Image (cartoon, rainbow, N blue to C red; front, side, top):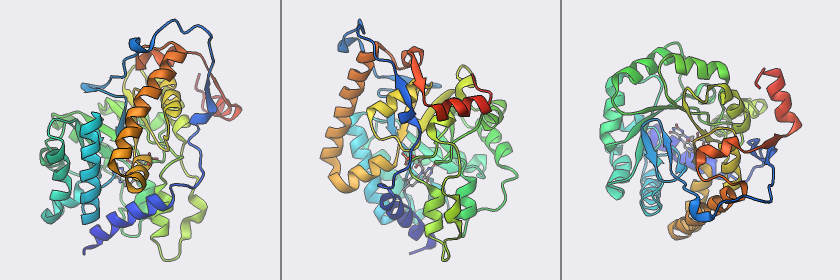
Length: 344
Ligand code: FNR
């Protein structure tokens, strides 16, 4: 077993261990106003959405998690079967390990094998070359590529990167030289309007703000350290709701994905209300397949589709993009965030 294999298994184990820890992604602080006359019927509601040139049948998807170990192979196989059955899009975890260690390639390829016609998204870190980005896409015959930005995780990870000087210019090169759509994503620390402006300046059109309030990689990497020095840093970053508010001004210039602690259709609705066009879910799906198995997970996903349709009917929204036009009220904390950050 190499260190990579160990790290991937530890991430899965520690993410599942922290599943029940209470932390808030802020989406429960967004309330829709109940209206007595929705004036639409459930059959009017369509759940499909778009992210740049990508068309998704459903507005929530299986976000990046794993690959690169035997355990990850099994998880990816199960997730791919669920994605195929439910027509959800699916991202894999970073394929970096597969580019370095060919013996791990199958743990990623299994995703395409089990879902030949599905929408599959590859994933790499921000320091990789254009050539690696192209290989990452080819490996999975992927429809898009996610580039993750995860500075706090790298720094708390004992064996992580320490030099972040070339990330932006590197992402710019990838965006300009790769044919497939490129999505830049955080990994649970959220984004700011300054970051979003930088991404727009280099031509990024789809951004996953991946905020705080779900899987916490400072916590996970800290648990892997001998002395757990970073206990005080667990609240670092913007919540998912705060990140979407940061993105508010840029909604016409890019398509935003919300992720970070999303657990049910009402939180999805709140994310769409704040302008997201799709929702990514990792920790919740990991927990689901590990504790309930594939069949119950498929039933849960099918139920969520129906529940989301009901919620959209309640607020009179026939399409995902209509949800952000419905009146909402924010908690005092979120209003305070907007005031201090000059967001209106
Ligand atoms: C992740 N995440 C992640 N993201 C990424 O871009 N590349 C990766 O390799 C991984 N690896 C990974 C492993 C595991 C076990 C989990 C649970 C998550 C981060 C993920 O895509 C997402 O941004 C965050 O987890 C926040 O969403 P949730 O988990 O709170 O829904």
